[in-house]
Amino acid sequence: MNNLPSSWAPFALHTPRLTLRFLTADDADSLFPLFSDPETLRYWSSVAWLHPDQARANIEQTLQGYRDGSSLRLGLVLRDGDQAGALIGTVTLYEFDRRNHRCDIGYMLGRPYWGQRYMQEALPAVISHAFGPLELHRIQADIHPDNIASERLLQSLHFQREGHLRERWFVGDEISDSIIYGLLRRDWQAAVHPAQ
Image (cartoon, rainbow, N blue to C red; front, side, top):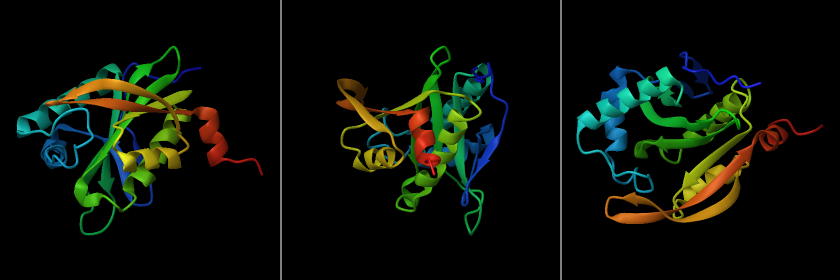
């Protein structure tokens, strides 16, 4: 029943403005500015990067995830315009539980690209792939309680708020709670393909 592989073969997803593709070692220089911005990482579960070596280490971790099937990370790349080819963010499926057909989802978008609905375009493509070819049953997201934009995004994609976990993350000198959202395949399919 489950199509989750033991390693990920490269593929790409396409939306009107984006290509979602596998990352390579050549993406480290583009990834660093995204993850070194403290404002962009304000509600992330780790602090902003301080050195380009962190980008290279992160890319190697991503490549290892492809090799062992533990995570699936796609870069958001602009398709057209003056910035065509620019890497502007990422979406990651991780913490796969193959027996129970579920995983977590995480995402980030560089601050220069906020307010242009890129993530509202990217996430449905990834979710449809997860519930379609990957045959997942459930996807969950873990967000910071103050991340109102992310909460609204998840709600718009039919995720349901399911829990509040207290003092779950130590990030730098702060400790923060988590809000858990979940999405079931049947709810997604009903939303995307409502009965006529």
